[in-house]
Image (cartoon, rainbow, N blue to C red):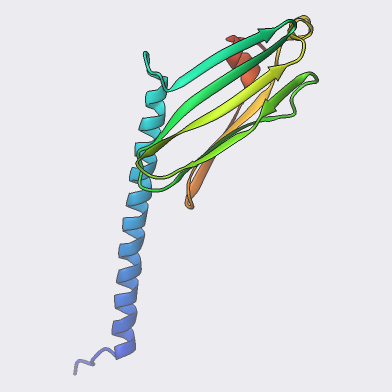
Length: 158
């Protein structure tokens, strides 16, 4: 004789199927959003792009570098972007900047590095300044990258 499944067993099977379906759709949406955001961000670095602009202002021995980056959010979820300096050397200050960009819009991330005495830094081993960039799909995932901004900005360094 074949026994009938209980109502609880049928309900649990339906719940398991619903959870699986929601998980697959969520992971697919997050993957698509991350892919779209990555492609939009990389397009800022292509030749001829106006997505990133930099301007240097020098006054005597002091200099200030202003960087503006247009960050598109082509994905489905809000995009959180920030950039900051960690432990700048004496005579160097940085402004930290963060931005949360709604889907299908763009935002401008403004970053500034001020150097009190350029000659003094050139006579030392140059500018070595750790900068951290963080990008995240709110509220799912984020990635953090730390680079030597001084070497990046001057095109070399050790």
